[in-house]
Amino acid sequence: MDLKKIFTLKNIILLTVLFLFLLLLRWNSFEMPFERDEGEYAYSAWILRQGIMPYENSFLQKPPMIIYTYFLAQLVGGNSLWAPRLLAFISVFLTALILGFVVSKKYNSSLGWTVSFLSVLTLSFPHFTALAANTEIFMILFLVASFGLYFYYRNKASFLIWFISGVFSSLSILYKPIAFFPLFFLHLFWAYEIFKSKAGVKVVFKMFWGFLLGFLVSTFFVLLPFLISGKIIYLLESVWRFNLYYSQVWNSYGLSGFYLQMGKLVRVWWILFVFLLLFLFSKNKDKRLIFGLLLFSLVATSRTTIGHYYLILMPFLSLAVSFALWDFYLLIRRSIKLSFWYIFLALLFFLIYPLRMQFGLTPDELGIWIYGLENPFNESKLVAQKVVENSNYSDKIFVAGSEPQIYFYSQRLSPTRFIITYPLNIYSPKREIYQTEVVKDLSRNKPSIIVYSNKEVSGFWEKDSPKILLDYIKDLISKDYYLLGAVFWGNSGPVWVDKVAEDQLKQASLLLYRLKDE
Image (cartoon, rainbow, N blue to C red; front, top):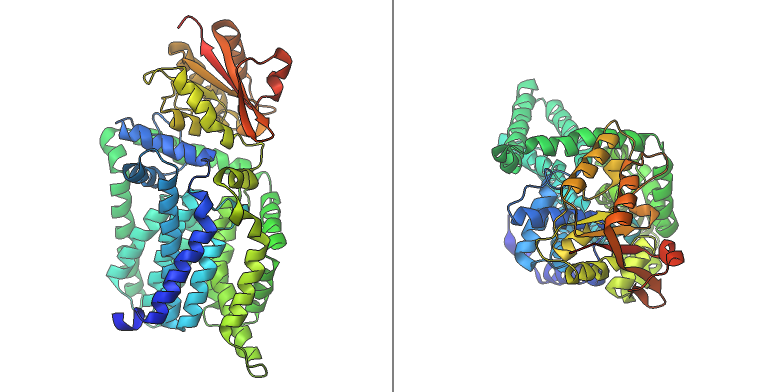
């Protein structure tokens, strides 16, 4: 590798511009209020720092890599909002550089930089809630790293390269298992190319064992703390067993989630689909690979209504659009003398213009713009402040709703492992058992404070769900707690009100109750 060819003045300037471009896309997200997934990861990392094992004490559906990532963020930035978002920023930047580097090596540098710029933009698509430090952002980095190994070493059947690819694949899946689908296709495609090159079946099996060894070694070390502590059973229950029930629920929705999220993408970035259609007719040698990766990524996500799942498409969509843009340039340059960079900048304009509103928003305004007023994310810090003022550090609190960021903000432990309430309500054979478990936990250890969410999206109770916990909480509050106050939305944002009339309770976003006689 000739470093002099890489670190040219042109490349250094473009690298700087890429960094600043990503900063423009994310500058106001660093202090944006945590959404509930981020709160869940932050709380799990925080209790791990206290020597308390997640999964056993925080019911988390994601594998442990995201906990370790937030753990690292908290070592760097304490209990800040910006630290995990900074790691997400770095992850997106590295993803773009990997894609750009391998494309530059196999095609040309202009195409490589195009892929890099498109990648940071698509991986920051706000309508897929991409500005949060969510699992997909980190998952995609290792997925793309594995793709980069294939793209760079595709003609070399090396045990070591497949071992490293196994490590990257393991890390990607241990952020979020949906990475399995494009990774499966990628390595199947790679193995077929090795076989087709007359390397023989033995060589293919050798590569497979290298991949498997790397995958298992990486997985072992990631799971080691839970194996040593004997808490692996809790991890498997929430990450494996419950997720099977969870996926069945999403499957019942059919393709409604796919239509919803693709509708958002088409409305905002219709021009991407124009170039994706052009790519169908491209003679690019990697067309089958890229469309295969897009298809298998859709298989992983098409049943869910959650936007950030669809970020897995973005690296491969960026590749397809970049290749199509280059083909378009080669076609028109015969009759029109126009620099490729003018065409690329025109595309960027069409992509950035629909997002122009986000760049001038404050972090709080950005959170509302992305998540809306129905999600009590902007109120959570205010409520957490009231929790701190009205409790001791050793006190436990219970949030009746899926707002785990309140536990993290207030630095208060939950008396139950269910820091989100979706597992208590989503249809599964376990929901009655889980609700009963929470009731027993709260009976044994009454929380000093109960935060009650009135928002439907918070999921404390859903239609057709058992009322075991709902009835218990209402009875418990009426007998043993008094109202400290509530948060309402005013013209300038969330407002704390100490004295709330009975007829105003349903209009409150979050209600704060204190245990009597304390």
